[in-house]
Length: 77
Image 1: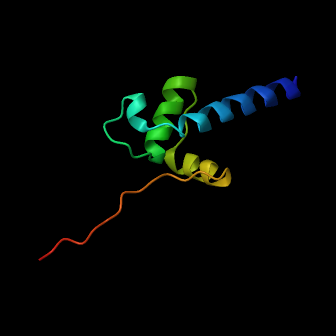
Image 2: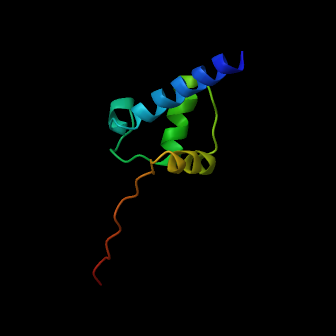
Image 3: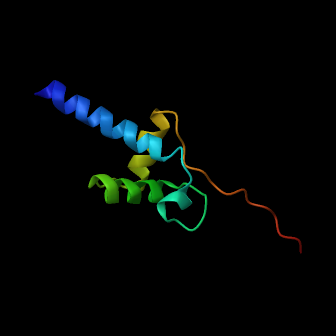
C-alpha cells in the first residue's frame, strides 16, 4: 500500500514539474513569469493539493527548479 502511494505521489510530482516546463500563459496567466504563488495555484487547481508558496519554493528548489523573478532595472532620475 505504501509503495502504491509513493508511486502515485511520484507520478503527480513529475506531472507538476512538467507543467513548469511550459509557459504560464498556456495555463491562463497573463505573463510568462513563473512564481511560487502561480505554481501553487496551478497545483491546487489541477491536483487539489494546497501548498503555501514558500513551502513550494523550497520543494521546487530541492528538485532543481526555481521560481523566476523579473530583472529589476534602475530608473533614470
